[in-house]
Image 1 (cartoon, rainbow, N blue to C red):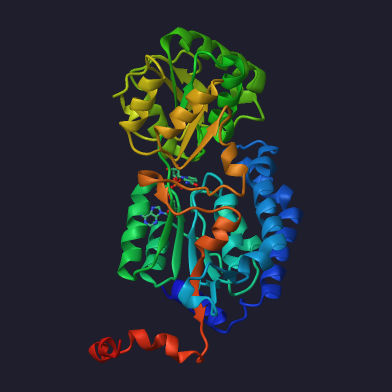
Image 2: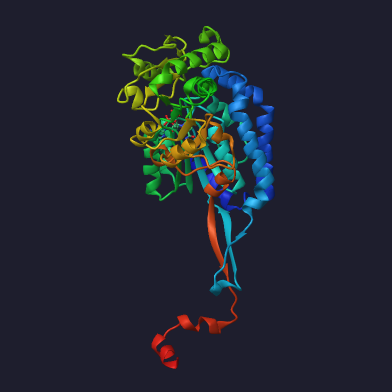
Amino acid sequence: DWMERQLLQQAKEAFVSGRARPLEFRLQQLHALQRMIMEKETEISTALKQDISRSQYDTPLLELISIENEIKLAIEKLAQWAAPRPVEKSLFTISDEVYIQPEPLGVVLIIGAWNYPWALTLIPLVGAIAAGNAAVVKPSELSKCSSLLKYLVYLQDLYPVVTGGVSETQQLLRLRFDHIFYTGGSTAGKLVMEAAARHLTPVTLELGGKSPCYIDKDCDVRTACRRVTWGKFVNCGQTCIAPDYILCEPCIQGQVVEFIRETLLEFYGADPKCSPDYGRIINQEHFNRIMSLMEGYTPVVGGQSDSSQWYIAPTVLKDVPPHSRLMQEEIFGPLLPIVTVSDMEDAINFINEREKPLALYIFCSDQKAIKRMIEETTSGGVTVNDVMMHYTVSSLPFGGVGQSGMGHYHGKHTFDQLSHQRACLIRSLKMERVNLARYPPQDRRRARR
Ligand code: NAD
């Protein structure tokens, strides 16, 4: 692990030198990152086209715009975010200075997943830079983009990119960082947290899980299905906040299937395999895993596959039993099971009997029912009458709860997550008489009273 140590050492020394501290320096680095994204947009999109056959249009739309927005926001707000925040005083501190000073933590380790290799590493990096930290970035080895990332994100020795798989990541995890920001599955997430515990390093874990999508019978089911179809099948279903499964009443199940079928035809044509807008699975292992989830079921839409291309057609399965394997693990692929429930209350119970999801989607036109469903369930985030869009709102904290993760980011939330909120109290040496009450000997003073 000589190389990892060396890079960490360099980053640490660069951090300790104080170079990353001045706001002008942070702004400069953010501008450099911004320029790189703008200049290399085509190169980045082409890499993802080769990787998972993602549409040329989707990479800017799904990854690059959100990175650019995060950079723009950080540049615009940095002075405000980094400024000391005066807080409320008590009677005893009325003449003191009382404030919170955000300060950098040190060196942050960022470990990313392959499904959105740019956003999942660079959005945390934007926050790390803004907060004045150094950072070691470890993209996923499964994405061919990780080498491109290493080649393009060359800012300073403060922010090295380390490529490699499980063994390199484990080497890194033996070293001592000041914060670890991890995005990926929960199995590796547990190993990350275990390794972090050895150094008492705090972690942010952005994990996955099964995000439910409830469609109410009294809403505009056609529009709902259109939005769900986009969110489920974009990036070939390999999105952490994709709607994992649909919950609806039996009376609209047939309608839901037909509207999704209609939308798929509109989006990807009669044969999605030939569509430039439809992607592929990342590798053979994931292809096999997803195919095995379908075993024993007859899809009502799709179901075709081609292992030579790791192609799986957009697939819908209806009347899926709640205890089937399809309903146990995160699908992370283009299979959409529909589970029927008797009403909204039944849907709420269904959700609450399972792990707390990363996202929850509710399609409903009754405002009271919407509020009730939000109130009686929990999830990392929720979008009503659409899917995934809460991710794009920088002012909303993005992250999981329970098994879907801990900590959150985006916008100022990333800055705060990667800063120490230092409590500062500045008093004066005057007015000593006020302090007498706390000094011993207490009995003498009481006697004096
Ligand atoms: P993964 O767990 O396979 O890998 C994530 C990272 O951990 C990679 O960089 C990988 O190199 C590293 N890693 C893998 N095994 C490791 C080990 N044994 N020890 C140390 N490091 C290891 O995850 P993935 O397949 O890349 O991503 C899919 C998962 O990530 C899904 O569950 C998805 O929901 C989740 N995800 C979550 C978010 C989010 O923002 N919450 C975003 C994208 C993906």
